[in-house]
Image (cartoon, rainbow, N blue to C red; front, side):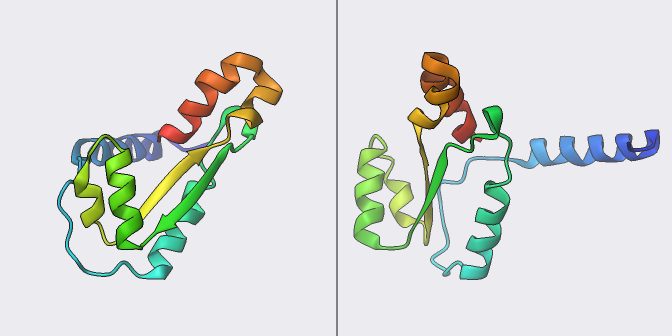
Amino acid sequence: MLPMAGIREADMEFQELVHKRGMVRAFRPDPVPEELVQKLLSNAVRAPSAGNLQPWEFIVVRDDETKRRLAKAALGQMFLAEAPVVIATCRDVERNAWSYGDRGRHFYSLSDVSC
């Protein structure tokens, strides 16, 4: 357990992180190093999920045509096609349904991949 001072420091760091967060719709063309992509994925798979079922799959997309198709499929959000790399997050609705029925299929699986 964190001492009280540690809790305050962690709370301040979290608040700062939340306040600095923003939507990114413009990207530099610089390539994203594979090491950074792997670090992001390593952190992503450690995120909490309902029942620790981890109903996600991450697909790393660098191909320009595939990024354009994803952007169109994302209701025409064409800025996605300009990113040097896109990490598509997919959910396995049946994995949650096995444990939680319809509420797992419709709600838990969506909340598990939304962060």
